[in-house]
Length: 391
Image 1: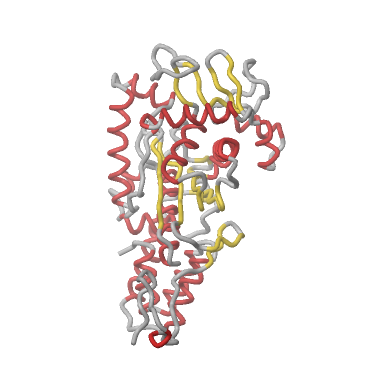
Image 2: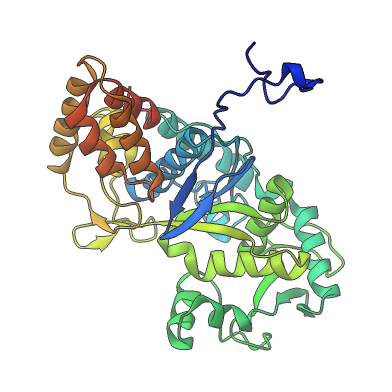
């Protein structure tokens, strides 16, 4: 008799215990050079969008890679629970909404709709949770109260500052570089209210044009790092398996976010692994909304298809910086055509499919998996088409 499903009540009595192999669908994934044994649920937190403008290729690459990470975790046997936030309480969003004569949350929803259209065209699976910052104000306030109770935060003139001095040392950066990055991403190391240059606001007072909520420290709004810390814990608990974002988020954002959660909960590390996707450049400079140096996903989709654009992003190591050039689309199209041609061949060996899986489990080695699939064809190529959502 076949053995019962592992989720059943089990077999009672020795006579019913038939010795036969049991396939436990799990595997070890290697990310960023370290083993990540797969367990369920695999909790993935993806730093999402600040919805004040449309999606560019550099931003979209993070979400495509996060989608492939989820697919590979499922391939390894994990149940994946993902959370991708929407930072809809942010000063740059407020200014953009004011410039368009609209309320900040209404404007955010319109931009979020455009973003979701781009994600659908790129076959990015919707996350399990989509927390929005304005819905998690009580969680930010709870985080602030917990940090104050642990003496990891202090109050100054309506601000609640997290004591972040130790974050720089743990990040491996020197103080000068950390100051530069902090200033670049909206923190103010020279603020005289702060006891240390790397203390960051969990809560801050709001001006007349800023969104504001009542709090024990006065009317105000959350700080950026605290928003993500609160949204992550509210949706996934006090720790995650993988924290995903662009490479530019490693410091100060992810470092401060993780430090806040660990200080408030006593649980660490906040993330078992981190995937910081390499930046995309254009004309020698990083793509960024702040500079306008952009190639928009919507514009690219007028001249190519979602699968081609998706493969353009994926056919390289995920941490590698790269520069977009229009002629790269032709190479991605040729690579996709070769994969589809290989998938049309007859069944390949189980060893070939296993080799594709092994490449994907080895730090999401999509280029290596593509090489194997194109050479072996058949089942191995069809498997890769499914996992990478290229069909």
